Length: 177
Image (tube, rainbow, N blue to C red; front, side, top):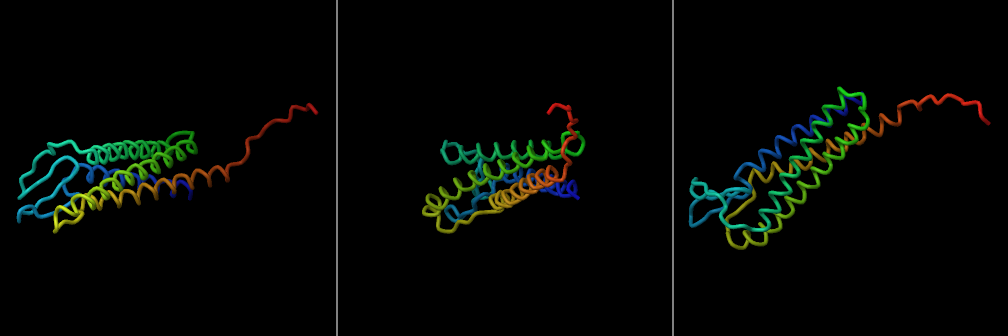
């Protein structure tokens, strides 16, 4: 039962990893109208009238969001690898706990990235463009937060439950009193 639960946590991590990669790589974090033309932007490029260009200016919030998203992907990847390894290795408990910690770290890193992006977008772009909205790449990031948080909690719970059910090691009596 517990390893089925741990498998669910790992599956949640795999799904979150895919969503994090897609969210970070795509250009639909925000959509707006620019001089009457449809426009959208991601962390790496912006597109106006379906022609995309690399961000040419260095803005701190893009750098921070990119950094936190990339660190989140790495942490989620580590959590998934440890979660998968827990099924084949003899140290299942320690790997499950480590996988859970890595997935929880990934959820917090993604949360930081999304919080930074949200704050700046609402304060700056919300005042600059009248017709704008967050888009599907951004929303995938939020779904990934929920999945990594869920996967991490499941892995930690499985570790704690498995540790509680494990019998205490047999320590031979030395006869010294």
